[in-house]
Amino acid sequence: MLCPRCSEHIQLQTAAGSNWKITCDWLHRPTVQPSIWETEGCGAHFFVRKGRLIWCP
Image 1 (spheres, rainbow, N blue to C red):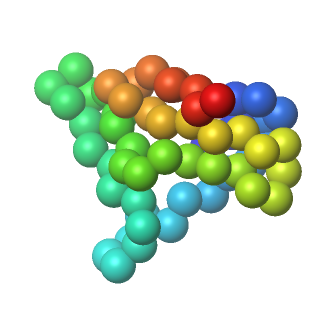
Image 2 (image 1 turned 90 degrees about the vertical axis):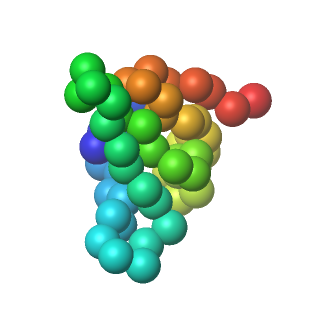
Image 3 (image 1 turned 180 degrees about the vertical axis):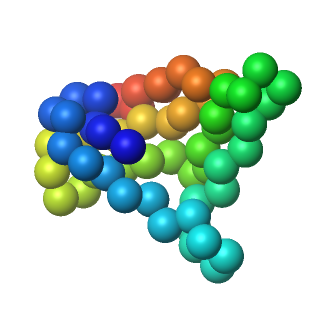
């Protein structure tokens, strides 16, 4: 996915045993758990819930 703040590429390891879990509701909107924190780039920290970005302060 692309970082919504700086447009850099963010890779999430979603294979078995990874930290992230991605689910979709009946409208195919993704939810990613836990939050996504871009520590090497711009520092963006956000949640994806039902296809919407929720920014962390």
